[in-house]
Length: 222
Length: 103
Image (cartoon, rainbow over all chains, first blue to last red; front, side, top):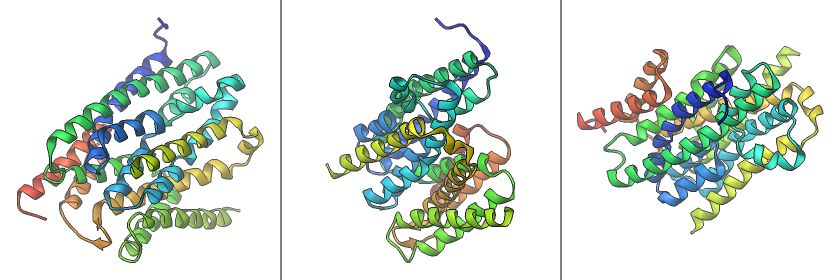
């Protein structure tokens, strides 16, 4: 039984808060047309909320599997950056890296970074990573089964819940002028592209647009 | 069956990115553009997903009750509601719009 240090305590509360919204992912997954098993497989194997929502969001809009995969992968790029930062911070054994990688998500990264000492950083990473994993997967299953029992997802406003879910992921990242500019330009690009390209593609085009805006912001800064 | 392949391939790609972070040389971290570009892509993709999920129907643009859901979610976020509440509020507002006869 680990001691209830500050890192463990904050890790557990993050796990409870985040895990519960696995219900919304589970319900949206089956509403998008995935089976209960496919929805649960995304939570078990992909285990990175933003990419999972992106995958089912593209499928729900009628996009192809390839568009869904591309959107999920591009959103998962930030986990690679977390991996680099956590490698430098926690110094795992090379052979343990594949295990650390699976539990590298927004929450474990944030909870590790918030701690001061190496021991606490490690406890912060593992309690948030493992805690969210257990809760997220449990509640994904609950949500998927509930979604299956609910029938027509539109009647329950599940499509509107998906918009709210993405806005909730975006909101905390809108600090300052540069990210807001990127968000606005990408929103406009998406609206322009929806009638012109097959479903799913506007999201990929928006990623290219985001990179272009980012590049121009950096030229300005340099 | 086809969908299973995409689910597993996408999961493998996301896992590979996580693992790659642990295996890449640390000198990459000294280049501030790496995390900065990843953050920019995340914002751009999420913004696009918000819009696409709110106003698209196949290849068409439509305004329906989902917009009510998005507006209600924005108010909830402004009031610093927890994430799960934001999602529920968005769904409830959309369902309310539909039961009031809106598309």
